[in-house]
Length: 202
Image 1 (cartoon, rainbow, N blue to C red):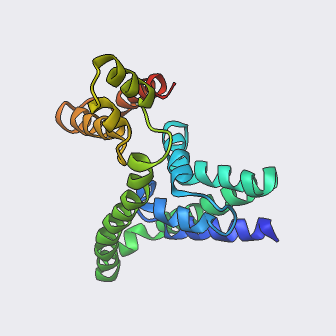
Image 2 (image 1 turned 135 degrees about the vertical axis):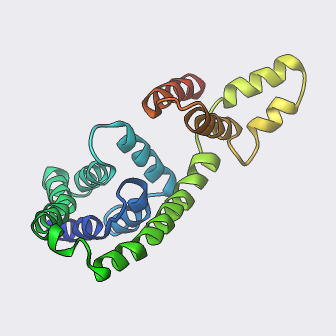
């Protein structure tokens, strides 16, 4: 039964999703393949939407995938599946945190999980970078072609035909600089880059 399958798949995501957010992107992508034949580019769009809408990435993605796979019932099953492990684990931890705070076994397990979480984030980057920078729907293609025609130069036309979306790369670099160097609010940066993308995507 698809509702049960959705519940189990996203229960695993919730159970093994150490680090949350981008750390479980690859885990989510692999989990949804039995239900939706989704390209990495489409999944990257879902992640982008999930990042700017209220709620955790895993919950938003589970709700969307469940609905696409089996309607409202599937959405409820996937969402309940992904949040249940956290509810159970937090309930147990609250009761035992004082007892195991100094446990070498627990501290060792956490020490092993931390680098694994970094590896999961790297896997998420590998999943999202290619469709974000080389996928279809290039930003500013019409603008670059027009600039090339007006300037009588093939430079802009060559850029528009590049295998890499140059404008997306510029947005990526500008985002990193604004957040890492100038300490701008990620919310502010997302709004600005989203507006730029909307303008150039027309």
